[in-house]
Image 1 (cartoon, rainbow, N blue to C red):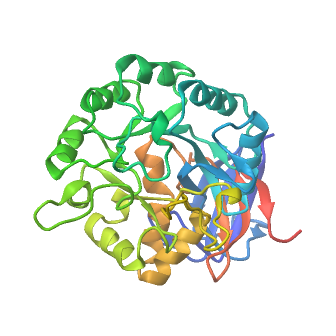
Image 2: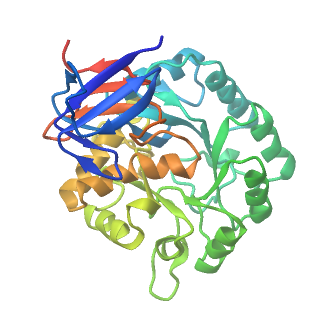
Length: 367
């Protein structure tokens, strides 16, 4: 369907610039123009809030009652629909550490899913090539050092589907695996790792360009051994994934990360999991020993938490839209001519009230 529409926006953030008021023109699922209103814009449809690019979430383990691991194609579709209600228009289904047959089956489910709601940009493999010392909630029994053949089987199951692989670079074969991942065009991300500062820097030198959930499941900052966190905060070559739900990272550290890295080098993620993982006493997903096991807050909530902590709204928005999109070579996360018409209308509290994907309204808080 060649949908054509012109929208009048009280305020529009691209996110490279803010325009108020603004006109947004779309056709065929793509943005054809954006700018200030003119007399040539006849009968535009008024949108009642701030228009921003749709959020891009690179780490979604599941949502509501649907997991990504052990999913069916219908589960993946259902997650995409549910995420649209949170202002997410593009996402990476995340497959946590698992046995190979489970991992390949989950890849099959993503590949076979129907696209509805938020669009799937590709898969994030989070493990099983991670550190036992920093495994977090991952199943230790399935963890292993990366081998060329094992990595290749996952990357080749559906060529081009895997967009991010998280691994611990200090493991035997870790640096070689980073180079192997890069050869497929995917992003190598260091995480769930006990690597030292020097080991982390070696991984970045080898081509790693993302760190999975900065501060969480990695060697922490120390003034004599900065660890992965120190390497990520000080090296401009790498983008820091960051969970900003107010639980995984103290809001003061969220502000610190933005000041050290800037919004162009932070990719906010939700790390959201199905609600069945919530602990009955704390309300948070936790392992039996009390460790956090993912999040329940959506990426849009992460933006609101960051803004409440003192991060400029435009910076938080860029870190949840353009930066993650650029990291994996997607064309979403921006409102500009030629880009997919994926956008969200926010109210004054920065909560989504309407979500559009490819120019089609896929969710609205009101009928």
